[in-house]
Amino acid sequence: MRAVQRVVPAPAELGLQLIGVPEGADLTLDLRLESVSEGVLVSGTVSGEVTGECARCLADIGESLTVNIQELFAYADSATDETTDEDEVGRLQDDMIDLEPTLRDAVVLALPVNPLCREDCPGLCSECGARWDDLPEDHSHEQIDPRWAKLGKLTGSSGPDEPAEPAP
Image 1 (cartoon, rainbow, N blue to C red):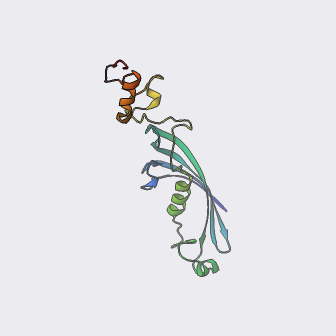
Image 2 (cartoon, one colour):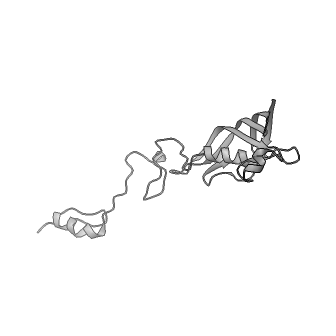
Image 3 (cartoon, rainbow, N blue to C red):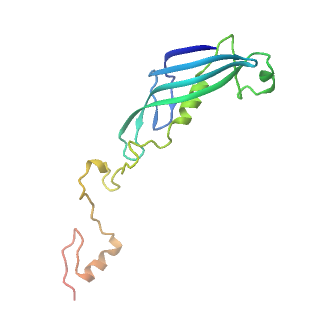
């Protein structure tokens, strides 16, 4: 067994549309490499900072992420190498292990599809597009549907743009 601790730059496009690890950001690898009969078993954790924006209010998000990884990299000419497809199990190539696909799978699967700045984020006002958190509590947009405007005239009430007419 061999323990490996390294800080490496994040590869490009490590994330989803709204959240991910910025390219070149530091990723901390804390791994254990074990030689097993069929290859090298890599297990451990990957830690880094993810950034993005809230899916509801578009506020910036920054948080830490730690994911566990465990992957077997098969020796050339091993039974595992011969009985599995190329994309099922990683392969040792010239005594080197390419961790990027394993790292990418682990990080992307751990990220939320719709990230939120907080669980109860109210989002944006559907009328003016401002963040609800930035608006006063009494914020509203009083608009009367034009299909109901004549009904308001019958009851003597008025919309915001029309003067009140007396009821007959």
